[in-house]
Image 1 (tube, rainbow, N blue to C red):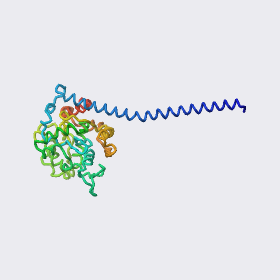
Image 2: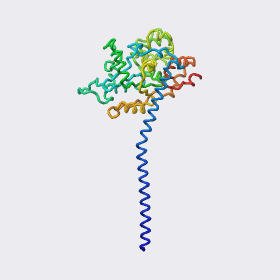
Image 3: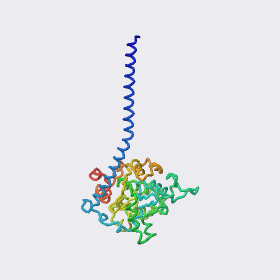
Image 4: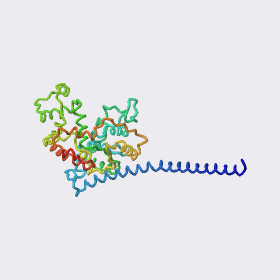
Length: 345
């Protein structure tokens, strides 16, 4: 090969090498750019979600909104102290969590116990992993510092203290589709044998809505005799005006807005069970706890929205509409779709 041909070959190989280098550099540069920018885009997306959820609540809580409900126009100081027992406070990290039963509250209570360091492990050190906390103590009210306990401890000085915490702490709650939450509560408390709920509520429902004048004394006896509460009986109980005249709804089917008072408390974060993983990751980052807290995984057998039609199959359309009216404030405040198919079949 002559010198001229060698020179041409060298130039060609050099051009190929330079082109390859430029392509690789661009790929690396744009890959790095994407890796840096994608999380930022996700964060922006999540922030927009949060602002939207909070804005919807503010709009419906305004005096001139189309949604009317008794609790909307009262002030925080007009809320009875006993109605503030779902607000769990962690002073170490400046966090207030309003727990809603059947909305991942077991795992969030685990997290709050770890943050507060109120429970010691067998070795005497505070629990660091939420999953290590024994299930039988998670719902023990003595472990959780609530607003209601502030009143018991500080009396008339408690309200200024509450206002201070509400102003300076990060406040959050998690919500769920109202009808799906009811189904989940019924499955957990009445499909499974639960002695407490049978004695407190189940036997009364059987008497009033199943025409059983003398229900068995225990849930085990009732199940053994083939006597079980139906979802229809449960709905009849919720719709009966006599129910709340006798005693307030249990927290497992109490409306979410009545547990957490979103018109009186401006929450910084509104999570949803339907987007639990995404919302939890975002919230832990906001709180600066994402490298400290490992949120326990949720159950795979969550009650699904698409089960609604099966569960409501034996509920009359008239009762479905009454039930929607009973929980309409939750549907609209937390922006859940009105179940049109259920209400117009």
